[in-house]
Image 1: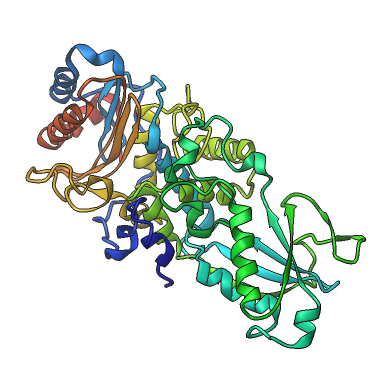
Image 2: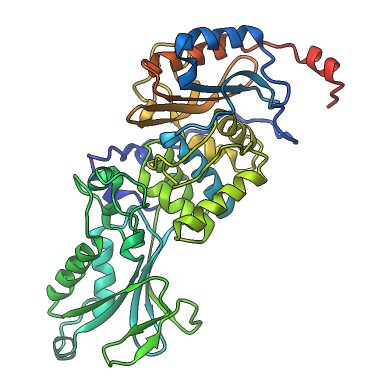
Length: 441
């Protein structure tokens, strides 16, 4: 497994721990069938009272849902009201990616040689694409090992770089002030160190060109870079005539390939460390489209196919940085419950932060009964706090989602509700509910 070496250097993103720590396997969860039982409303009065008491007079700012291991809604407060989820959006995009792409998926960056002799550089958004890897690509483009012969000096290397058009580099509704920070870096297919240093790299294509040019010039060669929009099917070569360079050309040869870390590391980067760039790329690759509108539509359809309640749900990006996203706590908790039935659930749950141990929860809930027993995803925007995940209890897992849009002390409320969900885990008696509804296993 290739380590996330470049991203580990980006201390401003605080993401190196995503791979440095061993993959922790969550407890096994029994396979189940059917849909979540949301129609009855909350069936655990004691837990419902605790939830209402925890939010107090600010109930209008909250959406909270708690499901048990059979998909029964134990407690619910405004669970069907869609709110801005912040980075809890990543729970959707990573589940979609894992289901569609599988565990062996890696993002590729390839140097191609087409039948007409032209060279082309294409990528899939590897968040860990490093300067060293681009230098290796440049050496192959110049000539195996970086030739310094007279032909290399006389004839510049023409390299076609296929990239997303500039208007797609940022989702249109990301706030302009966010785009200059590392967490709001542009989303491109060829992204050196996730297009971020201490701040966002505002022109990633120009940076890539500088790195390629320097690497080839150090070997006595020259590079002529041609930047082409990814969706265009023709380009102008150095000989003048537009020539087809579609990636569908079967006779094209892969001269060199760099691959990302495997799926479990990409999931961990997105969920444990809340890396926006990675979440955006995973959603686009899962949808097989880098058009954000199309990718959002495909994600929405996938959610519907999972039996997630969709009233009010809006998907606008993969990371949660867009304030146009809308999710309900019932939708998130149902998704978590459904993913517990998925054959790849161990990868999904293992990608989350752990209370008191790692990721965005490493400093939360230490010294409490939640320490090491809550696997979750946090979310933060101005005026928005969210937390959703899987809570271990004596009586099985609980699938919890809490979204606050405007609460005054959200972190304290979230801790109180998680503790209550753990403490009141035996409520209700399933025998009584099954008898009342005629349910049979």
